[in-house]
Amino acid sequence: LAVIEADTMLEESLKRIGFAGETLADRLGKVSVAIIPNLPEVREANRIRNNIVHDPSYRLTMSEARKIIGIYQATFQNLDLI
Image (cartoon, rainbow, N blue to C red; front, top):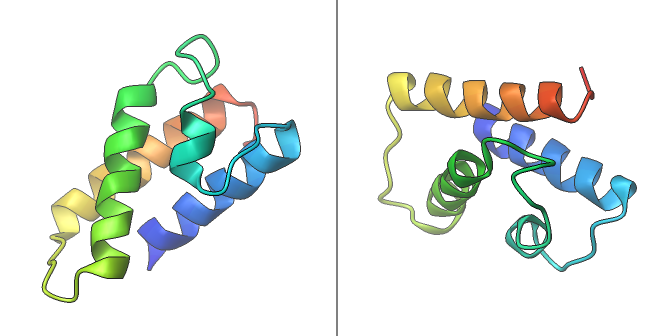
């Protein structure tokens, strides 16, 4: 649940900053590594979030969840949101 919430928070933040798109993946396509230095990791985190939501058989370990939350946390720090 924390991964889903962090992903939603990032999507809303990018929307408020002015990045257009239907989904977070669309918005991330308009962002450069100058804005989000860990952009490849954020894209992977978003892919995993999509697996959690859309694939009922997908299982996320606690270790993986912590790593993903760390990716979102670093992203929020890079965007001066925390």
